[in-house]
Length: 499
Image (cartoon, rainbow, N blue to C red; front, side, top):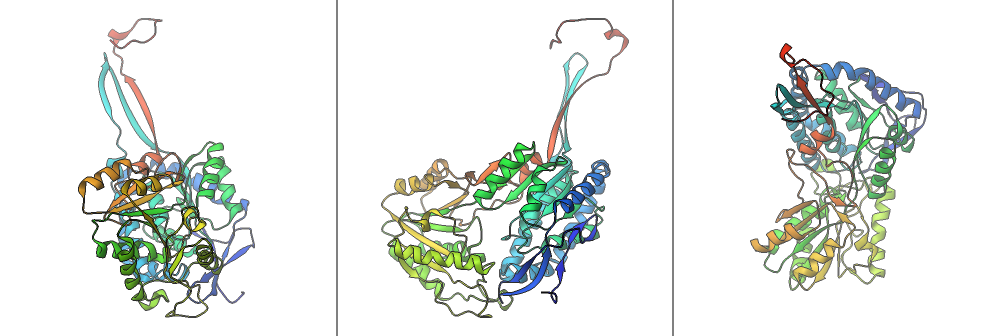
């Protein structure tokens, strides 16, 4: 492995090697080969990054909002101009097709643009003369050093959900990206430095559980933001909260699409393919279960199968529709659910193992996979598979479908496809899920609303970005003020009263 480059940390405005010699391989999923290695930080390395961020915090906190916004604007312009370069990095390390990578970056850019409104978003309130000569006003101030732990499936977008808002509000950041596709984080940090961000405000530390645990318990880290699987999200929340930190910890999902008999099945089939197989299904907002209210299932399955036949699976640089999965281990785990489905009595309508790929045969390939008549007791239904696997569950009524969705341990996203406005309105009121699409398969909110689910899909104090993100990365002070003049002298030992 000595002939491949090694990705370093990014600390204090420059590449940093750190003290640990441990590394992990970074694969090109489309070829199955190790393209790079990445350094894995020790606790000491993490401590160094936090110390740098802590040292940079006072000056950044006291930098004028006008100056902070100017730097943020420069970053926005640079990122927009060079998003193609970043998309190439995402495709090379994650495997997603270039168009999907560009879409990820553009959604992240929306949050950068939202953060440009921080002077307005962080304004306090003022009440004059609440008592004679007394005014009360509130201030929103930054927290200090904040930690971000981001997942492999969106190596650009998820960090961009968090650090632009945190930095615009006056915080400094230590980002720990996934070690599976780490280069995007360094690229973004270097670009922000080029935009004028002072050294130490945004730091990137690569690593595994050692670095994560060090971040969670560090006394100088005030808050933790995380996206990942539910077991890890719960661990992040419990550990960080135990150590006195604010936490926004977004977990896993099993997103359902409820299809009513009056739905436009061509529109629904398009949406199911897009939401189920885009980014190889490695999305927490992917649709993984279609709840078909009979008699629509047979027609819908035929339409989905017809569309899948036209998809090309292959190297993301070749204009294919769907790329590989992130690692061989993950690919084999996802493919294993095909055997589980067969053993549990489901019909395997499309077997993703039976594909011809436009790419290196050693890549981590699995094509779109479709199951019908899936039992709700099967692991295929219950588990977050995180791959290009779509299950059909047939129900007799709207109520049966709604009850099925509400019984899930997850509550991240859901969708209903119907032409009945009354049914859609009832669904949005009754469904126990945090993000809902009405004839929209992936209801990810725009940047000025907040992202997050319910139940075991979200742990902690706040959703991501939007107003919730501003509140998370700031804290409020209330100031009660009286400017005395000589007429207000004298002694009064009674409890203050509002007259």
